[in-house]
Structure formats: structure tokens, C-alpha cells
Length: 389
Figure 1 (tube, rainbow, N blue to C red):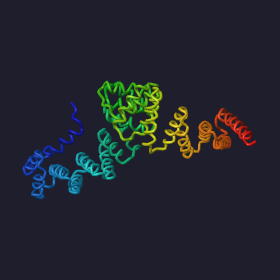
Figure 2 (figure 1 turned 120 degrees about the horizontal axis):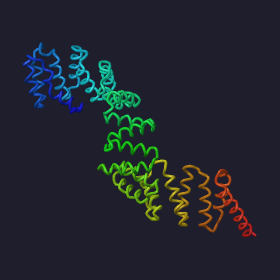
Figure 3 (figure 1 turned 90 degrees about the vertical axis):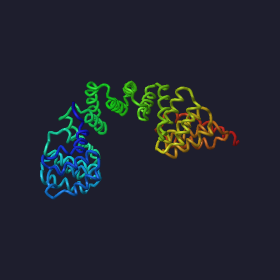
Figure 4 (figure 1 turned 30 degrees about the horizontal axis):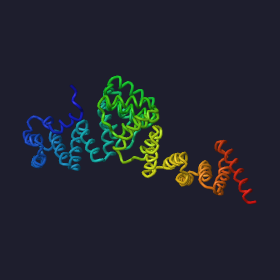
């Protein structure tokens, strides 16, 4: 049975006696103190050792374990420097040193040391795995991908490495590579929640909504929690797939799991309208506008204005059309404003002005809107002419 690398590392840290050389009886009390997690006691015992006892790999292993446990990073660095001076090929010394630097967020120094490790042993998948993790912390996804690819080639059965590669492929929009790797790994481990989540994410990014629904069902069958991300993707996929009832229920659950509700309110509104629950749809559109902080607010306002227009609630629609026009100067808003004023008010002066502005600025808009505007301008002017006589 394989012992996970992390457990191996913890075992080595907490069992420095593995490093002890025969005959160094003076180190045994320190080993015992570390075995019982008495790090302050171990620290005192280390300081009481003779100079002769402080120059061996066994001592350095004990001292580094003690200093790291106590958070004495500078002292630990001094030990690792002395240890690697004594044995420049000690993989354990370089590994622990690199992990220390990564832990205290000295990522450039950790990179230097991991690079040294890989020069010492370029066939070690675990070292490439650690380098990949470090490169992610350094916000170097290209370097991370290179390291994980090396690790995967040396240890293709490590599912975590495979998942990191898939994540990076998705980040770089290498969808074919991501899906190919997902297919291979899901054949090996179809019950992996992590792989299913990645398959869900890949399908969602690519707008493959039936696949999103299939993967969400698979995740629930595997006992996955109803997380915000899962419910949101299932809800949006269901909406785009025309399953408005599922979309409604999924988005309702998602909305309880986040404070970022703007987009969810909007899609819930669309679901309600599709389900003929118009009052609820209107309420959700108003909620989306109120919660809105994104550039999509004019979209919410336009949808609400169009609904109110259909309901002949023109006085409520007009300020929304104006707000949308101020945001994007779409000539079509001038047409909607003209019609709303035309329908709502006996005086046609404002409506006429908007129709004329629309004809001037909306030459690329649909012909039927342009034709209707010309007809109304002609009719309004005729009425105004007769009224003036």
C-alpha cells in the first residue's frame, strides 16, 4: 500500500529518529521530546548539545523539525544551509527547506530550491508536483502547466495532478485537451466527484447545457452537496435547455447560498415569465435592478420596460427606456419612447420628437420600426395641421 506523500513528510518530521546515527545517544532525549510534541523542551535540549554533536545530519534533522514546529524560520534556514553544506545532495534537506520557504510565502526562494531539487533528481514526479503547486502560488500558470505535465508523465495515475492539468487547460481555453483528459480519467474513475465537477465546469464554459445537466445529475447521485456553484450551473443550464421548472428550483436554492444575487434574480425573472408567473417575474427584475452593480443593469431595465409596455403601464416603462438610452444610446430606445408617449398621452408633441430622432439616428434599425415611425409622423402632423386650422 502506498503511503501518501504528505503522510510521509509528517512522519519524517515527527520521527527524526530515522535520521539518527548509531551511537549518538545525546540526541535520543530530543527525539523523545519531539515524539511527544514537546518542542520547547527539544529546543532547550538542542541548545545544550556540544559543538561536536551539532554537526551531523541527525542533528540537523532534529533541529530543523524543532525550529519549524516553533515557527523559528530564520533559525531553520540556518540549519538547512548548514545541512546542505554538509551534504549538498541531501534531497530531504532541500525538500524541507523549499517547503519552509513556500510556507512563509517566500515563493522566489522556494522556486530556487525546488529547481535545485529537480536538478538533483529529474525523475521524481513528486518534486514536479510540488513545483507545479508553487508555480500556481507564484501566479505563473504556464510554469505550473509545464511542471504538472512532467509530473503526469512520470506518474500518470495521480488523479490530483490530472485535475490540475484539466483546470489549467480550461483556464487557457484548451477545451479539446481538457475534455480528452477528462474522458480518459472518467473511464478509470467514473465515481470521482472532482472529475465530475471539472466535467461540469468544462461543459458550462462551452455552453454544452445538456452535458451540464447530465454531469449535475451524476454528481448528485455520487452524494455531492448542493453548493452554490453546482446549483447555479444546473439552474442556468436548465434555463437555456428550456427546462424552466428545474431552472426555477435550482436557482431558488442557489440564491440562498450567496450574496451575489444580481444575475440569479434576472434568470429567475426569465423563468417566471416562461412559466406565466408574470408578477413574480416583474418582482425579480426589480430585485435584479436594485441589486445590480454590473454593466448588465440596462439589460434588466429594458426587460422590465418591455414587460410593462406589454401591460400598457407606459408611465412606468418610460423612465426605464430613458435610463437604458442614457446608458448605451441605442436608437431603438427612441422608438420605444416614442410609442410609449404616443400610447399614453393625448398630446403627441413629445412622441413626434422621439419618432423624428429615431428616424435620424436609427437608420440601421429594423425596417418595420422605421416604417411605423414614418407613418405615425405623417399621421400626427396631419392631425396637428387640422387642429391648427
